[in-house]
View: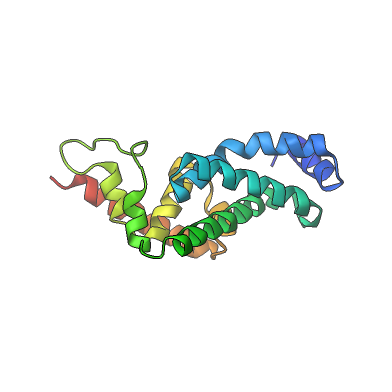
Length: 176
């Protein structure tokens, strides 16, 4: 991590609101993409990112290591999104989690893969956790260690699941 970023995180931990604002600006796009991937509704994703920022602002003084900032803030966002999905299910008990997957608008992810399967359909064939790991790695650009921190999973598990998921995607996309 850059020295200037560490200095900004340190200042934010000490209560500097301008520094926290700068931090938020640097991660907002990534946070939004992650929230949108999980929630699939623009307004819900924006709300989740705002809630995450508020919780992060309240708790940044407890951040143990400046280098862990990204993993820490994504962990907060993951919990916020999980809570929102749970609230949605409780409000709409007749809608099963599998049906929620079908309700998601994933047109932004769809791309034709030759004449065969679209990327969307290929991703849908992955287990939800594997799909999330692929999205964080490929779309989000996060390293295996960062993904492990975000998902609270061992680094080796994330690496092996990513490798298997990418191999499965290649196989699916190569099918005639």
